[in-house]
Image (cartoon, rainbow, N blue to C red; front, side, top):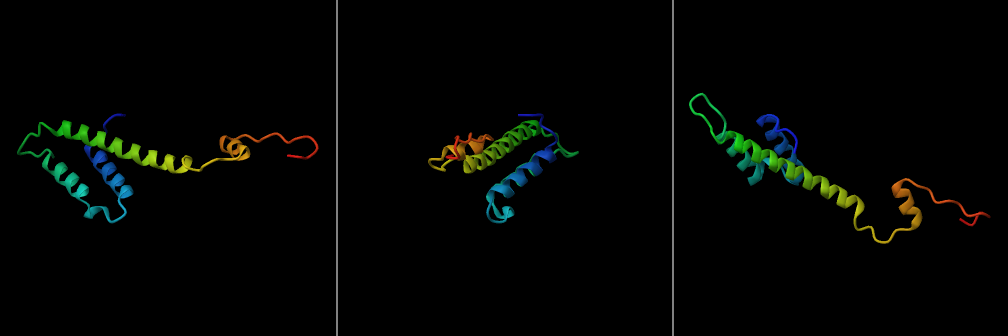
Length: 107
């Protein structure tokens, strides 16, 4: 996992991933309400010192990494899996090659 960034970047990233994952408006989901409530409860104000802010930020960044990875894995799985048996020409085209032509125009 890369550097954490700011809590605001992590929060926005989480909301972006929720938008991708949800088929319905993401603001109606319990996940959205939980994330917003947790970030609000752990924000630093002038009246209190939040000792768990770094811990929350690390957990949120880890969850964001998980959501992104699952989305990217699903996209790759959809693209490359479950096509069944492929012809040699199709496999060669998939990896960027062309099969040689047979002499006499038979291929």
